[in-house]
Length: 203
Image 1 (cartoon, rainbow, N blue to C red):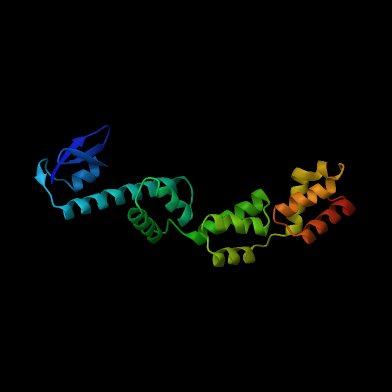
Image 2 (image 1 turned 30 degrees about the vertical axis):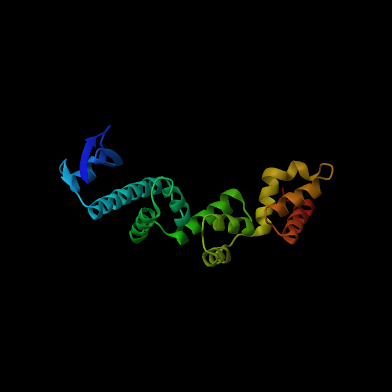
């Protein structure tokens, strides 16, 4: 197989085998892994080159995504697989985990804190959000057990923000109860919160 490199737009380098386009890389990578145009390379050499190119793409995409916000491993891999193969994605994820930039427990704790404090989520709702992002049941359980969030206080805050005007409308109490239970709060906690609101002028 005969390899040729063609300069593309910006820093892009297009690689061709026997005159047919195969893959694109960048000038920096090509400077480090250069083959003179017209060089004959083996199947093994080409496969190694392609793996290196794919890993570089996955690594750079990882860096870009993590510079924007923290991710769980599952989230990051799903995004990488849109443009990278699984081998390259796994290798990039492994490297960023080794470097300390990717950590599911740290991610999960930060997310749970945000959901509790800023979104007023219930334990059940937080748990489901963690599961959706690929957080293990063990880590999720530990984080929820460690939380010091008072569910009744959270419900009172939610009612104050979103439901107080509905509470005293026709069938309003039942609708508010149903909405809060759908959010994952227990009926007992909802009942206790509404009792405090209705009897203590809490809101």
